[in-house]
Figure 1 (cartoon, rainbow, N blue to C red):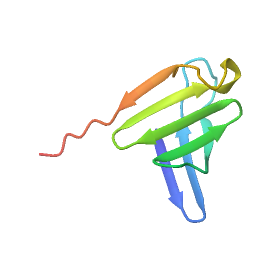
Figure 2 (cartoon, rainbow, N blue to C red; figure 1 turned 90 degrees about the vertical axis):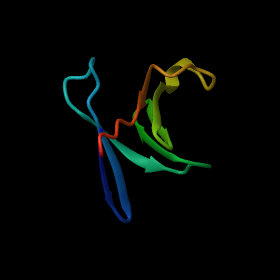
Figure 3 (cartoon, rainbow, N blue to C red; figure 1 turned 120 degrees about the vertical axis):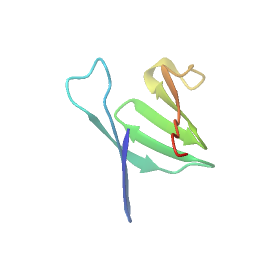
Figure 4 (cartoon, one colour; figure 1 turned 180 degrees about the vertical axis):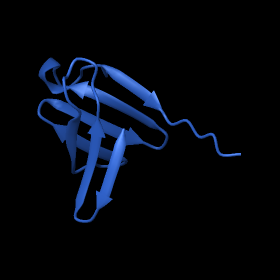
Amino acid sequence: VVYINAAPNFLALLPLADEPVTRIFAAVESASGARYASGHFVWTTQGPEASLVDTTVGDAAAPILTCSEVNNTP
Protein backbone atom coordinates (compact mmCIF):
# COMPACT_ATOMS: atom_id res chain seq x y z
CA VAL A 1 0.00 0.00 0.00
CA VAL A 2 1.21 3.47 -0.84
CA TYR A 3 -0.29 6.41 1.04
CA ILE A 4 -0.43 9.91 -0.45
CA ASN A 5 -1.13 12.47 2.25
CA ALA A 6 -1.25 15.95 0.79
CA ALA A 7 -3.96 17.90 2.61
CA PRO A 8 -6.78 18.12 1.83
CA ASN A 9 -6.34 14.92 -0.20
CA PHE A 10 -5.56 11.64 1.55
CA LEU A 11 -5.30 8.59 -0.70
CA ALA A 12 -4.23 4.96 -0.48
CA LEU A 13 -3.04 3.08 -3.58
CA LEU A 14 -3.76 -0.61 -3.15
CA PRO A 15 -2.99 -3.35 -5.69
CA LEU A 16 -5.54 -6.17 -5.52
CA ALA A 17 -4.81 -9.64 -6.90
CA ASP A 18 -8.06 -9.88 -8.91
CA GLU A 19 -7.89 -6.34 -10.31
CA PRO A 20 -5.92 -5.47 -13.47
CA VAL A 21 -4.78 -2.08 -12.09
CA THR A 22 -4.01 -0.59 -8.69
CA ARG A 23 -7.12 0.80 -7.00
CA ILE A 24 -7.19 4.35 -5.66
CA PHE A 25 -8.89 4.70 -2.28
CA ALA A 26 -9.96 8.13 -0.97
CA ALA A 27 -10.12 8.92 2.74
CA VAL A 28 -13.60 9.02 4.29
CA GLU A 29 -14.79 9.81 7.82
CA SER A 30 -13.69 7.40 10.51
CA ALA A 31 -14.41 7.23 14.24
CA SER A 32 -10.83 6.11 14.88
CA GLY A 33 -7.89 5.08 12.72
CA ALA A 34 -8.13 5.77 9.00
CA ARG A 35 -10.77 4.65 6.51
CA TYR A 36 -10.50 4.76 2.72
CA ALA A 37 -13.12 3.81 0.10
CA SER A 38 -12.91 2.73 -3.54
CA GLY A 39 -16.12 1.54 -5.18
CA HIS A 40 -17.48 -1.29 -3.03
CA PHE A 41 -14.20 -1.80 -1.14
CA VAL A 42 -13.25 -0.20 2.18
CA TRP A 43 -9.66 -0.19 3.50
CA THR A 44 -9.29 0.56 7.21
CA THR A 45 -6.21 1.02 9.35
CA GLN A 46 -5.87 1.09 13.12
CA GLY A 47 -2.34 1.32 14.47
CA PRO A 48 -0.15 -1.28 12.67
CA GLU A 49 -3.16 -3.33 11.47
CA ALA A 50 -5.18 -2.91 8.25
CA SER A 51 -8.07 -4.72 6.61
CA LEU A 52 -10.01 -4.75 3.36
CA VAL A 53 -13.78 -5.31 3.32
CA ASP A 54 -16.11 -5.90 0.36
CA THR A 55 -19.23 -3.91 1.31
CA THR A 56 -21.43 -5.87 -1.09
CA VAL A 57 -21.23 -8.81 1.34
CA GLY A 58 -22.86 -6.78 4.14
CA ASP A 59 -22.00 -4.63 7.13
CA ALA A 60 -20.95 -7.56 9.31
CA ALA A 61 -18.74 -9.13 6.63
CA ALA A 62 -15.37 -10.47 7.64
CA PRO A 63 -12.34 -8.80 6.02
CA ILE A 64 -11.20 -10.36 2.75
CA LEU A 65 -7.65 -9.25 3.48
CA THR A 66 -5.77 -8.31 6.65
CA CYS A 67 -2.27 -6.91 6.95
CA SER A 68 0.21 -5.94 9.65
CA GLU A 69 2.92 -3.31 9.36
CA VAL A 70 6.45 -4.66 9.12
CA ASN A 71 9.06 -2.37 10.62
CA ASN A 72 12.66 -3.38 10.00
CA THR A 73 14.18 -0.29 11.62
CA PRO A 74 17.10 -1.32 13.86
